[in-house]
Length: 276
Image 1 (cartoon, rainbow, N blue to C red):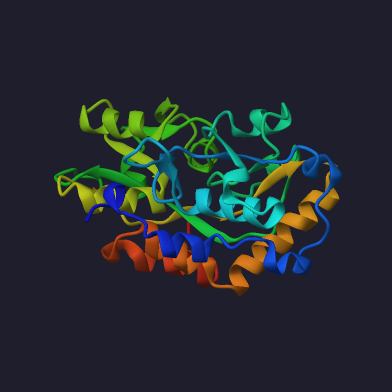
Image 2 (image 1 turned 45 degrees about the vertical axis):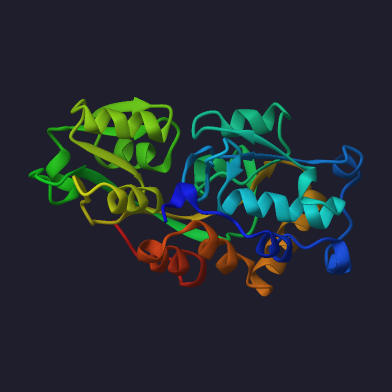
């Protein structure tokens, strides 16, 4: 059963998207959010298993379920999550333009981003890797110095290469699907991205492999606008409750195939590893 064709049992969904029965554990919802009647969240639509389009074209993934759970706690129904697709490049502008009120969008915590938005407590860590064709001579990061590396605009991977390999021949694209297509077409010799996404792709396509040298490891957190401390406090409390109720593991089991599940379980449970 593939990642994109998994059927979510109705009972499991109901159990994991609990209503407001324990809402007293959370601080008051800020009036600016409560008055809207919906939770407006920016999520990814091209990064399984965190955020992607399911077989029916609807939103799916671990971070999508996080947003829906927040809506269930805030407004009594997961349907009160008003979801918007964001990309690595436009997600912070979308937040600042008030098109969404929070980002649950594979958002890594970096000093540059912390200057313009506030971050919640981390809920997992995210590492980076490179995807190459199976017969590629690339075996480590340094092997790409004179080659073309595909990456997404506005990502931690792009920032890492700018800082550590200035002058690298980089092909910068907007979506993960565009980047994968470019690799398969030979427009670049490596595709640098979140290891979580690349693990899924490599498992599904035996013609590709991971280089296996971790880099640009960072915490992933929810992003909010500056100057919204009550909203940030509510989100932190919701994240803590998700962990206490073991919901992350339930969502990982839902969206991640058995063969790649250990990687994601580690990302949500284990300390952030050291990497280049």
